[in-house]
Image 1: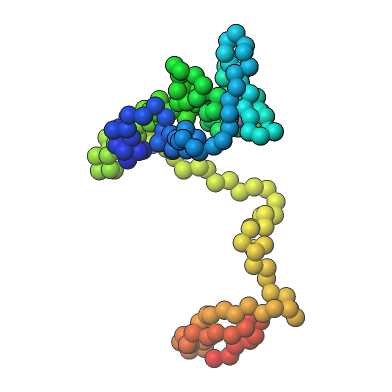
Image 2: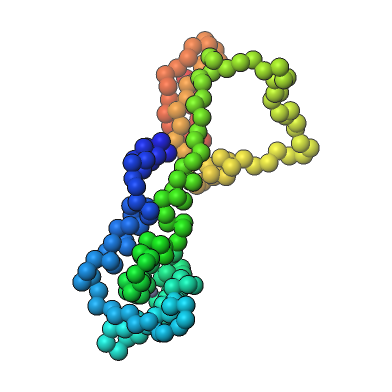
Length: 189
Ligand SMILES: [Zn+2]
């Protein structure tokens, strides 16, 4: 967050850099061959955008276009930019959704995460210390644990599980070497 803030602190544009790039692509002279024609309405908000036989409607007050991109994304489409280019006072940036502007970014990064001291600097609180939860044994047979389900016990004639273990002699009490064999076999020392 701090890095974002530092990078954007010197940026002066109205739109975020990424959104400005998208607008600039449409504004660039010769980037499209669409022609905007004012419909003659009193508010000067309705435009017909044409190229050959194709025609689309743009409404500069409702921020809508026949292609739907403007109303869905808040970002201008090439047709909207063509219509806006007919205006003398306002620029394309004025018609982009406020959510895509630097004001929205600044509002997003307006908060910060405060520094946190490490444990040795913590102060003793007067509140009682929390106790661990009480473990109670429920009535009845214990539930099957998940790990049991994942590793079912070997079947008498089915898959045998390999394991390592040490055998102690019943007579002399000496421990034998680590044995590795298939479970279910019998051992003698
Ligand atoms: Zn459009």
